[in-house]
Structures are given as C-alpha cells and as structure tokens.
Length: 151
Image (cartoon, rainbow, N blue to C red; front, side, top):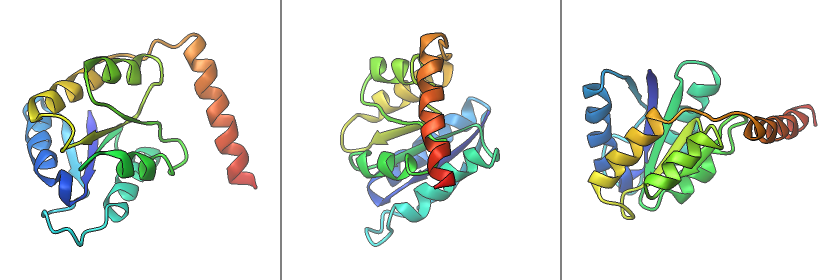
C-alpha cells in the first residue's frame, strides 16, 4: 500500500520511526515532512499536501502526527474526502476503520508511547471497513462535502 505521512515538529520523531516501520512492512511511503524538530515548522504546510495526496490518488492512505494530533486531524479533515481519525488506543484504531473507513490516521507523540503508536498503525492498516449501515453514513458525509464544492 502507498501511504503518505506528515508531521509537525512535535511529531517528527514518531514520523521517522513509523516511516521505518511501514517500510519494514513493505509499504511504499511518501514523506511530506517536516524534516526536523524545529518548532517554526507549521504543520498545515505538511499535513494538507499529505492529505491531498490521497484525494489525488497518489497514495491510498495518510498518517499525520503532532504533539497531540489534534491540529493535524483538524487540518487533514479540511481536505474534502478525507476521513481522519485521531486514535489513542487499539479500540479507537479498530473502529476508525471498521465503522468510519478512515483513510487518514492522526497520532499524538505526546499522548501515546511509540509502542502504542505502532500498534495503532498496524490495527488501522489491517482492519477492513465493515460497510452496511456505516456506508450510508459515509455517503451522507460525501453528499454534504459535494454540496460545499458547488457552493
């Protein structure tokens, strides 16, 4: 699977480690930065292009990382068609995919251990979308987003 990844300075260390992990699992990773822990790097400049790569079909999914992961999730979700879930444990990762078909994952480096972050990534990658009643809900979101594009 081709996966885009992006972070702010506070998520840089996890971005680097998760990139290695994804490559060990034989995924193709596109790194949108940041490339340091310099706090002057503003996350929207890395997160938005990473999320857009999924919509442009340049990647299948995207992982975004910050200190808490909140700002990164907010930014990613501004991209029409992105369903970014901020995950903090196994169950949140499972249901992000199972019920929400999340094509984007947000993590907080200050919120979870690296071991938990890697486990969340694995669950998020391996869990299929359940469909059914959940598909109707995603379609309702898509219709709303489509109406925004016309407005």
